[in-house]
Length: 241
Length: 308
Image (tube, rainbow over all chains, first blue to last red; front, side, top):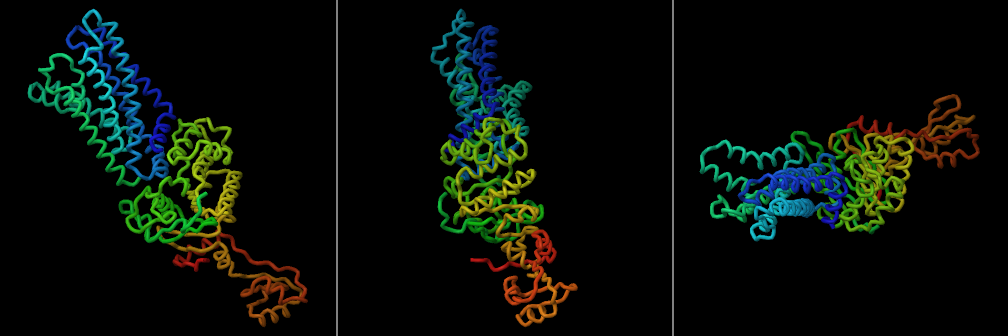
């Protein structure tokens, strides 16, 4: 019941449809551009690099799904309808993640189609095992980004601080990584920072030489998302609405 | 509507503080079915906090709030038990009115046709597909009331439902509240203006600074404030005073042909004075506002025995 209600709630505001569409367009668009411009190397990873842009939209979608309720005071209505708060948060997480991953799936599929057209002569095959793993992993990555964002938004309740925190968590570590010349620290950031670790799932070449394995990396991001969600849930359940 | 088996709303020793401010300070009262109970007090008296605690939105620091004998948070499908209007502005401006009620209905397993029924009932059927952001304050208030009525609940809470309404809207809400109580529901309505509850409330819970000031029926409060005085106009005041005094009343000449009587109801007075020429007999009636001011001026905490 509550899942259906949260789904209806999410999909009866225009912003959700626009943001989902924007996720698809930016992921495919940037991916196609990268495919057109890539000089070679990991072609699958290049073709899926639209996720760098698509995830920004996913973060906004997931954060707004929660902070909009606090901004309008609607959260009180939500909790009056469904006083069992854990269920509310789970239902919202399912609705938001399914929407984000659904848009991500379309964006990734679009990226692969574009890569097939643009990279055929460079030897790209969309159906190769590692490429499919990279593609499926990217969809999961976007789903986990949605969960991470929702967890942080639940804890912070306000749009601006939540967006700042999520983007800081995603982009600041790689930014530091570029400034640090020490190789060991570079590898640690690749291994433990949520975005580089999560996107390790996109690697399809030189797999023996990466700082973190594809699924291990995605698992690291899942740990971040799980922690954020648990932290948000603990506050959501104990705090006054 | 599910039958009410226990007291509708029951608060016992509620305390709630926000930081250093004590919003509710040991509040106990019950709300009975079949009548409109006004929840009155100045702004900041703790009315909204109490309602939030009843609805399980805020946790009390001490005491309990039960709805239909249970804490709100343990209710299954709570909208079928309690309908509430807290803040009519708490809607997403981009969502259509019907969709706003639809997700609420779905969350409690209520059929979509119930949404159309309540929209019809509050007069919003023609704007059901409009986005709520474009609604006037009165329309938002009606949408909030539609939401409260959605589950056909036996217990209804309205926090300042009259705020910002035009006279027509106020008239409509009064009729609605009376009608809901007439159907046997418990109707709990807060207001910071006693005059808003005149002719609407049967019973009053008066609070100030988070404490109970009075828990009294409107009739008792008015009788108390009016001091149960009757003004009598007669051409033979001396005889009237003698007869009434003998009958147990206190009667005094307060004008050339006017006698002020206390201590006897109007019917007894007319019975005693049968045979005397009476040109006028009026009960002095204080307004609810006057009665309320008298209550709060005393500052005393007194509670009338509740009518069973």
